Length: 228
Image 1 (cartoon, rainbow, N blue to C red):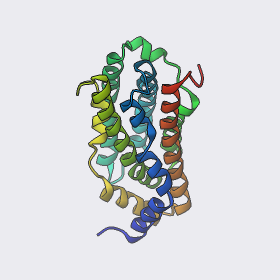
Image 2 (tube, helix red, strand yellow):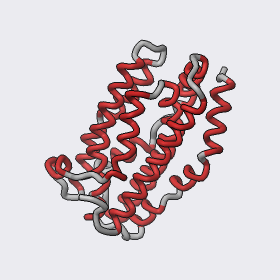
Image 3 (cartoon, rainbow, N blue to C red):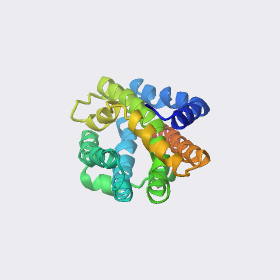
Image 4 (tube, one colour):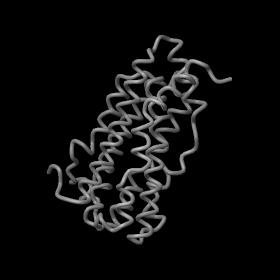
């Protein structure tokens, strides 16, 4: 049976973050790609940023597994890390389609706005409770996956990307639900004294930085770099 307090907190958070969630689901970036308003050169911002985001997230998720390995949900944290391990190669394939070499990806200079999500992930890995992180991922990953799916479709239709080039996006778009596990981790945390306020803050920041990332991709796709 799902724990009542955790279920109610997740419901409240989804209601509180409904506007930003809708903004993510209807973000103009994938549509701009589909309409040809983002050039192939402009698209390089995505693999350029994600190359560095993924490498940072891998370290963050390894830290999460280390911190929470002695809990009943070790398999969940291990699965989060395992899913991220295949991301660098998939990002490299996307970059290659856009003419980016491994060196290009390594040398790509991310913007603060485009890297803020990874910074939040690193902070959470070191400082947040398992309950905060599990709830934040439960709210955040579906929005990220939905946007990745829309972007994949647009790249296939407009730029001739194949499955090998959109594997990174498609993997996130097809993530299975982990709500029951996240609810259990959240309830355990609440029972141990994690405050709803802390859960709300961590979740809200993940969603805000998620939107900041897509806003940045749109801006970089349409104009000059925000920073170099």
